Length: 324
Image 1 (cartoon, rainbow, N blue to C red):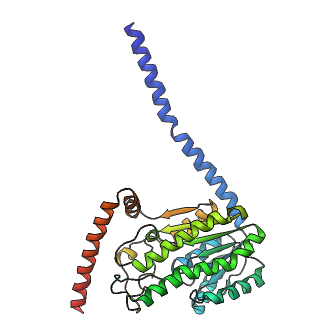
Image 2 (image 1 turned 45 degrees about the vertical axis):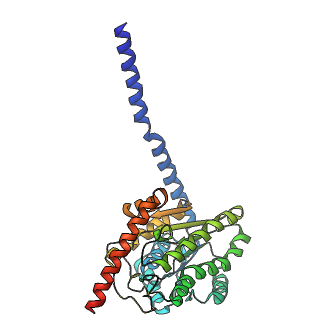
Image 3 (image 1 turned 180 degrees about the horizontal axis):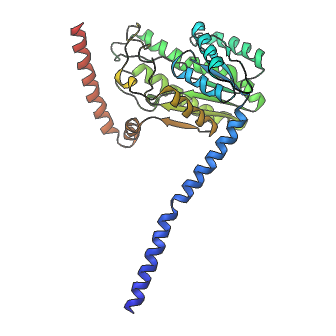
């Protein structure tokens, strides 16, 4: 009797062990299927027309390299034509892509929301269609709410939100007519939760997140896909080009930005999100992800931490003001 019980326990333990060993199998199968789909979509990406805003520097420039290397017909857009020409020259000199589609430069200003349709028409005249729109252009701000003029709030929202919305609306009817296309919104982790001294920037990214969610639902029946990516800090000139509360250029590299992700790596991650048909993805390190979940599952703790952070930032600003 005792031997039987021992035998049953040993048998149960063996099956339990086998069960635990089999748990990773579905995960590995999922990973394999994802990789196969990614490879298939990468081949289909060749020759696609991709419009990238903010392509004159930073993440936008890296995105231009990533999509160009994937064999796309890249349209480079931003305000600074000379910088766009530099990026175009770099692409042609750095890579030997077969088949080669020379990048096209189309300067545009996202604040000119009424003139964006004309820019879209010029691209359609060249290629006939746009397969992918990457809304990457944007500007940040470094200022507390009280010190930020309403004009700065308006400008941040105009560039980061209304510019992307206007450009999307100009292209969307053509995608719906063709029953294919993808809209990519490069948002920010600060579009998921807000931090002190980023009110205008976070508000614009929250708005972009909401617009993308609504749009995704509405265009699904037309086979138009929407991808929203929310990166953490990226090592670009975003903080240097950011605005202060008065509208002047911030002109400094934040330590958090300097230690951020490599823009080339982030661009490849965004490309993978497109290939995998991701809907809404956070591309950030562990601390911002913890803050994101803390905001929604333990908001009181999150609010307390942010209040302490605001006090610290205000004290640091006061010291710097006295030094200058």
